[in-house]
Amino acid sequence: MDRSRVFVVVRRFMEGRVPGYFEVVDMHCRKMFGRGCIDLFIEEPEKLREVLMNKYSNDIHPVYFAIKYLFLRPILLELNKLDVEEELATLFLQNPQKFRERLRQILNI
Image 1: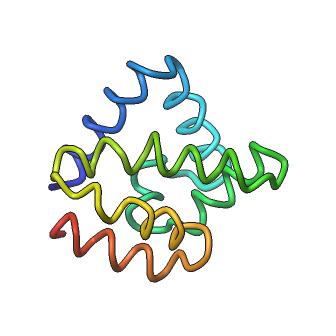
Image 2 (image 1 turned 180 degrees about the vertical axis):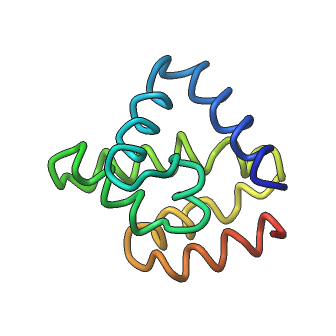
């Protein structure tokens, strides 16, 4: 799945569940790092984690929820790979470098 497809799938999924959330997170990413949230998600997940931790006052629970249910879920549903959702959500929080490697492997990019 290429980057543009990831963008479309994630944005559409978020808009259907939490209207406006994608735009807010994307704006924070651009303000803090000059890059969109999907670019950070794929290439620099440690920076997206920083954005989300900042947004949620260092509370890990809403960050975990956002990554698992709003970023990962639509991608993994599209790829029929929900079995790795928990692994990826945990890696995002605990080891962003490993998360990046595993996500890129799953996306085949």
